[in-house]
Image (tube, rainbow, N blue to C red; front, top):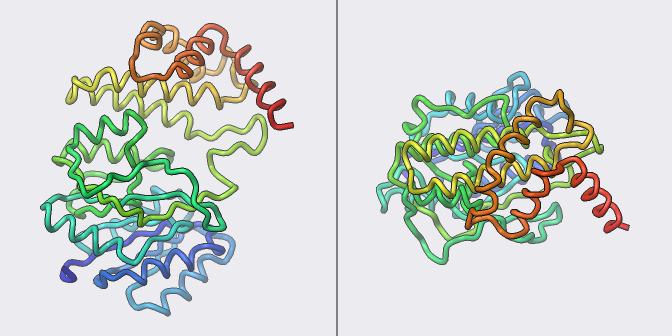
Length: 331
């Protein structure tokens, strides 16, 4: 199988404390025909120099330095530079087991499928296992595109490109959306329209390192990540796609749209729940217009429905009370 090159793209930004472990885990792969592209996205902490040092240790490593533009921008540059027939992605603070690309390539070859996915787990900075976000299958399975979309709508599927190996030609005419978060979800939904499905392996060979500092974790009571806006926009995009291509999944898409707005409403700062906040007002209007769907959707939990109904009727008051209760619970 070591006849087709895999280009592993690693977007790098201020990762000096974790990059070496990440890169060494890629270098240790049992599938040897690799090129490792370290795309330095304007690091300011010395990571750029570390990239050059690592490149001297393994001839398969290539580095590229660019102005800061975000992870999607770095990935898109990596795709343009890639010389391999297949693409893999690893985030600079994560690491992988030695067998990952050998098993993924074998799955693609045996199943004649353009995309294969290894399972993942989540660990903290000390390497301790955290609860699984995505449950791995018990054995290798082929998941048809429509079924995979359904799993995404139920928040059970893994939309990350880091757990996947795909044919480079599949990316022709596509790229990671720049300036957005939740970008993997949007691109994967696009690609699922062009393939029959994805092979999923049960081995949890990709390790997501959950760090204390996160782009979605609030630093102050008024800070707010735009990821909560992007997940709502992506819900609207997939609702349109489902109604056009997968009408049998309509009720799942409605559930997804309501759940994403619930996530937004539980995170938007109370200070931004104002009449002049256009996005917030659109979310409120949507919830009021879909109150019947909230109550009747069979795929929302009772807790989901309860919060959605309350946030539809009196959103600001509910958030104030919710924040007070959370504060009491922490003492």
